[in-house]
Image (cartoon, rainbow, N blue to C red; front, side, top):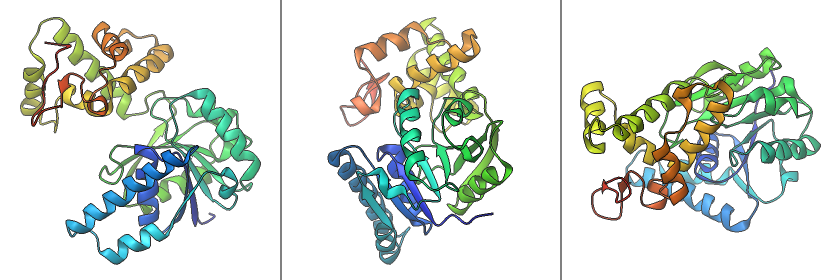
Length: 295
C-alpha cells in the first residue's frame, strides 16, 4: 500500500483549516489552497491561533507548534497539489462546485493520488463518478471542531478499491482520530441519525411541547447529551442544517428528513446560529438567551 507523505486540503474555512492543522500536526507536509488571499490568510490565522492556545494550555510544546506550522504550505494555485498523495476537498456543499474542482485536480495530480471529500451529505458515488479515478475516491467526513473531535467517517462507494479505503482509514488513524467505516448512504451514520433528532426537537417546539431552553435541558439531563438540540443546531449552523435536510429529503423522500417551517423561516431571515450571532439563541450578551425570532 502506497505511503501518504504529502496531503492537499482544498478550502481553508473552519473545516478545511482544521483538517490541515491536524494533518500538519501529525507530520504530513500539507498544502492548503483557497480561491482568494483573504480567505487563505484567515484560515492560516485560525490555525495559528488554535495552536497558540494549545501551547498556552500546555497541551502542545512550542517546538511542536513551530514544526506543524512549518509543514503547512498555503497557496492559491491548484498546480501545487501535483505531488500530493491524498487531496481532501473541504469547500462549499455544492455539487457543481465539487465536480468542477475534482475535474481540475484530475489534470494536475498524479495517477496514484487519492481524492477524498469532506462532504457531510452529498453522494460519494456521484462525486466519484465525475472524476478520472472513481476507484481512488473516498469520503473522509471530519467533525467540527476538527482538532478536538475524534470521529472521522470513512465512506466507500461501489467503485472505491480496497486499497484506497484502507489507505484513507489508516490516514485517519494516523491523525489520532477514531475512524468508522460507512457505506455511501446520504447522511452516512451520524447525520442519518442526528438530523431527524434535531428536526424533531424543532417540531416539538412548534407543537408547544415545551420551551426551547427546557427541551435543551431535558435532553442534556435526561439523555446525557453534552448539548441540547437547539444549542447544537446553532453550533452547526441553521443554514447548514437547512441545506442538509434538503439533500436528505430529496434522497429518501421521508417526512422525518423534511425541514420544519420554523427552520426554513429562520434560514430565510438570516438567523443562522452562532456564526451570525442569532439563531434559536441570541449570543450578543454574556450568556445566550432565547432569540427574538422564536420568543
